[in-house]
Image 1 (tube, rainbow, N blue to C red):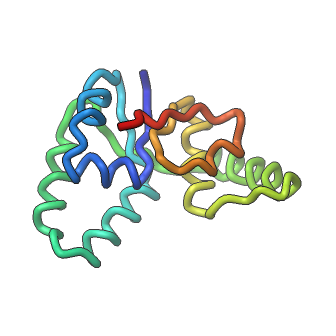
Image 2 (image 1 turned 90 degrees about the vertical axis):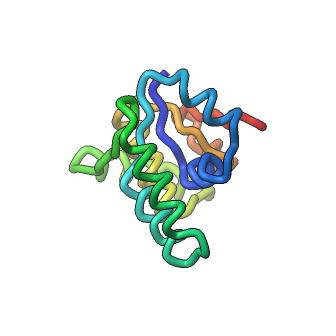
Length: 131
């Protein structure tokens, strides 16, 4: 399985969600969208465990199956299509999540998230890895 982590699940991982860690360990590839990296770093800056979390992030990114995922021109095209699709349906989602969805669709990734609003994008495969 090729998966991308949403910010809430990355946070869960850093908080010690062992079942999530186990399931991610079975993935062929785990991607962290740049948007998720920005959101998690903002959380670090506003939190009380910044240094501990930075260590956890470095350890995660050092794994051979984990990498950062960067947006590009095709991501912008995916974003635009999703934006119009959701606007016409009257079901918008937060902008950062729209970028994350666009990256997942562009790279054919399953999104690991707890945000149910991604269900508004039927072409986006998601898993919750419920705990």
